[in-house]
Amino acid sequence: YHQCERIGQLFKETNGYVYINLQFASYVNDILTILLGFSCFFGTIKSIKLLRFNQRFCLFIETLRYARAELISFSMMFSIIFIAFLSLFYLLFSGKISSCSSLLDTARMLFEITLMKFDAHELIEASAFLGPFCFSLFIILVIFICMSMFVSIINDSFRLARENVDPHNQQIFSFILKKFQRWTGTLIDFN
Image 1 (cartoon, rainbow, N blue to C red):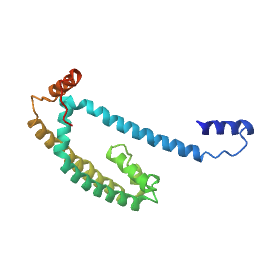
Image 2 (image 1 turned 120 degrees about the vertical axis):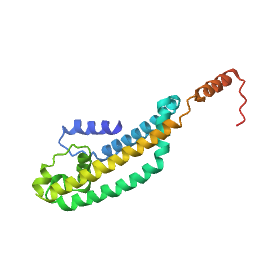
Image 3 (image 1 turned 90 degrees about the horizontal axis):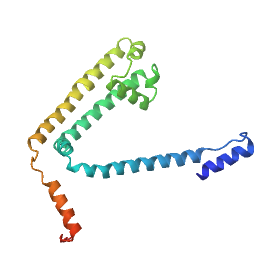
Image 4 (image 1 turned 60 degrees about the vertical axis):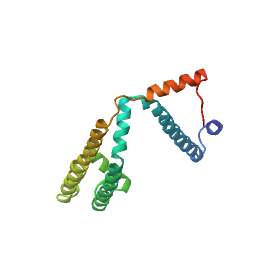
């Protein structure tokens, strides 16, 4: 707030004919954005605790619990493949395509290809053989093979979680009973 007041006062005094350094205001804005992100993250984590009584949410959590080791292995394998394609596309097309001019832009382009939101005409114009070949190789390896592996990992874990679900979940009843006992003062807490 004080930075806005200072900048507004400088602008008013000079009628906009002075250089105003906005670096500190930009820094404060970045810090506040980061703090807002942390607040949203922790608020979401706190609100997820309310969903622990939902049967579908419990099934989702159990699915992730069963898939945890396989998903960690899959994410390492996917990272290696993605970084390999990132290097390939950057080294081949950095001088020919503007969307491959930096590593970050190349990663963005590869994510767009993964989401099927990319126009491949730039790759064809950059190199008549290597463009379509690399594009097809990326589609086959990442979209078809890796995404199929991801879906099969989740599907197998969901099947296991659904088979092992407890139909008579007593968690809600015990939670309500403890709350009632605390409210009436009959609960003896040994902690």
